[in-house]
Image (cartoon, rainbow, N blue to C red):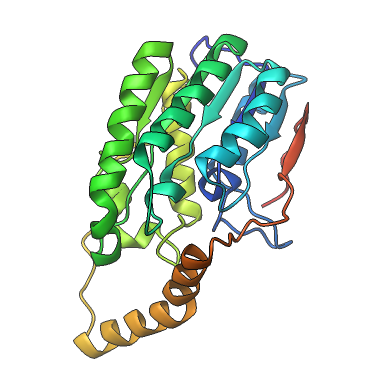
Length: 259
């Protein structure tokens, strides 16, 4: 039996993490944890409505300006807000400005919904992300503080060692796999009071370590296919989401796509 919490509507706000990259469906669209959570909530509540305003690559200022006012006007039962990490991963970042825009966004959303959910985003293990961890941790400390001031819930994905396992991350080492998104959906659902269906914190079995040469070859493929273009976009101020619309701009009844 599910717990008694009932939600009639859900709006997701954010960037690629909330858009659902890299949980790719056969039709070429992305699913992701927010769609999975919406499907579970829709199965519980007839007429359930869902909007996903997230767009890959968005900075916190863009989220605050473009998505937050739209989400606030929808007055949904549940709103999730995840943002600021794209700022923290840029070569130059004004963290004071990031904190201010995040607080502004939370202050705008909290009075308009029944439950506001923030997250400490998961972080992949590895040398590239290690460089940015001090900024990430500064951001997540602020997430905790702003949530406490505005009565929001926080899902601590960063503090979970299991989700840092490279096997939960796509070949770009920046976005979660389908199984990673499934675990995030489970974590958010439990935070909202839904009955646990699985233990999202369980680690995977130990992975065999491949030959050194094979691991270095994979690192080179990653640098050529993903890291180089990503650095290029950071340096030129371009984004993978430039010109893209939100995946679900309207708060409408949700009929989950077939997997």
